[in-house]
Image 1 (cartoon, rainbow, N blue to C red):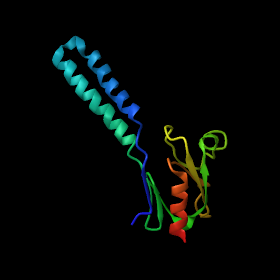
Image 2: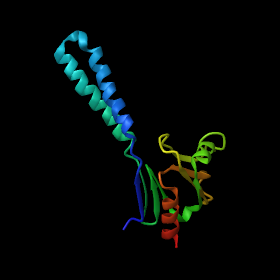
Image 3: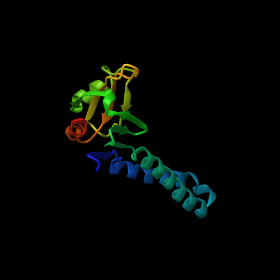
Image 4: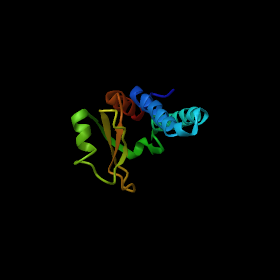
Length: 147
């Protein structure tokens, strides 16, 4: 059983932008005829949609004694306290309060985040910054797995 799993999906408006990118490619190919126009519409939409899907497919999971955030897998023993960040604090921690050594799984379309301290002395990363739609649930899952 996984106590926490979240996929940081892209907002619906990004899919509309992907469709508009396909329309833009189609319009660029309009001088080459209707077949090129249809190919550009299909190809441009598929490529832009693949980019949106890829960017929005990242997951955060607490599973098997580890916190998995995107490509990072950190054992829970290496993690310290976690702080829920509201929208204002999240902006501060990803801008002027940010440490360049921190691991940041940042999605601009998610206003809230969690900052988890790294207590492993061998790891130079001071903290993990994780965009999440439900910071309290992620912190609760981390606490429940550690207990």
